[in-house]
Image 1: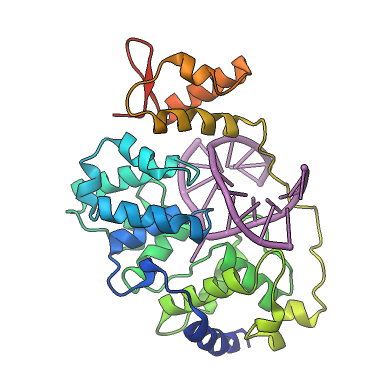
Image 2: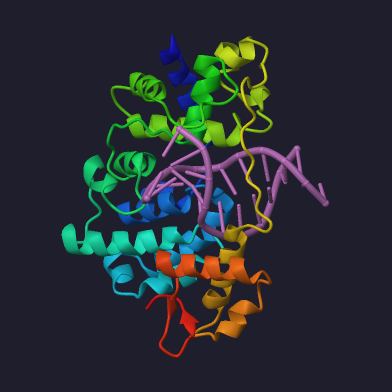
Length: 288
DNA sequence: TACCCGTGGAG
DNA sequence: TCTCCAAGGGT
């Protein structure tokens, strides 16, 4: 019965899919890999300009691998989670050295690259190479939770049951298109906040809607505060390094965050993560 | 497992 | 204004 979701969702996708550059026929596996890392926890509209800049600047893994990692961080801009820029740089090096400059097509080889987890490995294997994998991102999990399980939201962490369900829904052919279609439905119609069931191709058979769209049971999902956190402090400090072409004195970092203890902790964290370097003269810069 | 890791737009 | 959360991963 869950299989009857396929046709209406595929038909809906054929008509409503967005024309995104990494979905075009001329997109390379490298471009697709870059897009998937950038899209982790990050909206499409914010990725678009950064992805275009990266592809022009570094069209191949080799071209990025030749750069110092700090350049990847600099051109990451304000996308957020800048460790992803370091991960992409490390991916570029590993692909260049260990895979002959070609993005691997096997799930296990992708999964072994830095910053590539279950979702991203499945996405790249599917979208770049036509592989058949359960692609479980937040959109897919939400759509399946609602349409099949009758729940407003999926569990906090991906469960074995969710994986089994997704695998059972894999079509014999065309798994990549099925994956991107469900993701798109979740992104455009079956959204987290205000789902547009009137526009949904499977509204008539959605278990959650048929049950009257019951509110999420169980504990409220923990919200993430941001103002005043170490994360905000790290962001401020790194922005100084990104925007200064060259080493900056400690005073320039001290100026952007008042709390001395927190500032030192955040700076140590950036150094530990390889997002910043301290030179012998006590100045700081992006990693060379 | 639960927590950490950025940023900014929508409601 | 403030809360939520967006194609997750690492530890």
